[in-house]
Amino acid sequence: MERFIAGTSGRIHGVLHGFDRMLFRGSIRVLSYLSGMTYFLSRKGILMKDFLDWAKSLSKQMAAESASRAESSGRPLRYLASSQTSKEEIAASIARRDGIENGLICILSCVESCQGYDVYRNRQAKTLDLVNRRRKCLHHYHYLMHPQFGLCHVRLQTWVPFQVQICLNGREWLARQLKDADIGFIKRDNCFPWIEAVDKAQALAETQLSQKWEDTLEGLLHEVIPSRYSRLNLPEARYYWSLQQSEWASDIMFRSPKSLKEIYPPLVRHAMNALQCEDVLRFLGRVNTGCAFKAGSQMDVISDLRRRPEGVRVRHCAGDNAVKMYDKEGSVLRIETTINNIREFREKRTDTKTGKIIWRRMRKGVVSLRRRAEISQGVNDRYGDALAAANLDTPVGDLITEITRPVVVESRRHRALNPWAPSDARVLRAIADGRFIAHGLRNRDLRSLLYAPDQLLTSGQQSKASSAVTRVLARLRAHRLIKKVPGTHRYLLTARGRQITAAILNLHHVPIQQLLKVA
Image 1 (cartoon, one colour):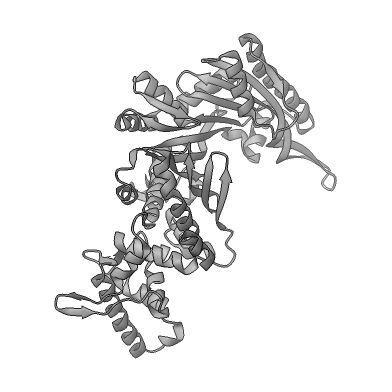
Image 2 (tube, helix red, strand yellow):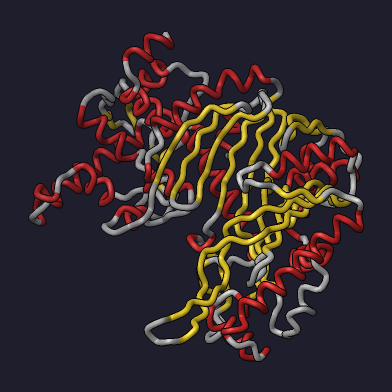
């Protein structure tokens, strides 16, 4: 990210990192899987033939208690015929109409799909079997204007196992923090085009990571359904809170819409033309990108471009996770990481058997929220560094001219590079490969890309190829396209190398008609 910011110095007012949308899920563990639900029914003495009557009765009680909050608060309870209706827009319009600045705004109810329990009549075995399947039930959305979090909602599933979703917005929360700290700001939609003291705002945003989330989420749910535990009357029946979906945004605030408008089109072209599937996987933390493309893999890597009312959005998806870039409110460039599947990432945990700290798969619970923020910021930083390669001021001709001349380093002459020659173009494409962004490339890595397997059958052929690649690496270092990592045999692209390779690779894919239009 620093490379991109340094390349746009003088145009930027400030940079703000933090959570945007956070979707928490609460689930009662003992009721969330079939054997646990069977254990619960056994403890309560509920027979399978009586399950549906018991579940319907409990569901009606839960729905009635949830709906009573609207009556006691004097707020509307509205049923929506379609689950596709934008509930947030309805709640926001009611809040504006009634001037709600604190407390419950409304309760919206609708029938939606959920994961729930039913009884299946097994005719062959002549038994009644409990099944966990997709079904539909009534859901209540409690929209409120929270004194700390601003506009948020609690979604209650009124059928067993009574899952809960709580949606908060980090930018709404930050606006409240800025107001309490008496820091001036301009807020439009869910971003800040201007903040009086960006460094202080960043410090406030980082305090959100220290929130006691389990107590906070339990407190929000208690307002919706106070008797959630007493009705079940089982000590093990407690909600486990996880962060189901998170959006971590890095907002680069430009001093004027004109400044962003000048550089955004080249950024979009670079993101769509130069960034390959391997690059996207690297941004999203995939060290071994080859695993994503092996036979039988279900990983889809997609980049798409869309124009929306708020701006142009570029989105790169790898499976369930994504990183995207778009211009917001004219003067804000947002880079945002969306994580739906946290299990693809790793965290350090203490092994219970050995006591050693080892890398393990990430947990879904809110206990790993700070690590999730670190991972998301790392994705944004890597994406920002890749965007920095799209040189915004220097003409492409000037960049190419610098490498098309011979250079002398320590009395040794290195020939010029010809980016249009197939051999040199293949080298430039290889060193810009997304697999080497984080850890660099070695002689053997470059050798495997430049030579076919049948060219390296004997040890003599491999030795000659290794010597040839050594000369190639020396030539690239002389032109300052790569640099050696101290103490290793690895090489990384320099900032200059990233700009030049990105410019050349972009030109290789741009149609003549588009070039003439730009000219």
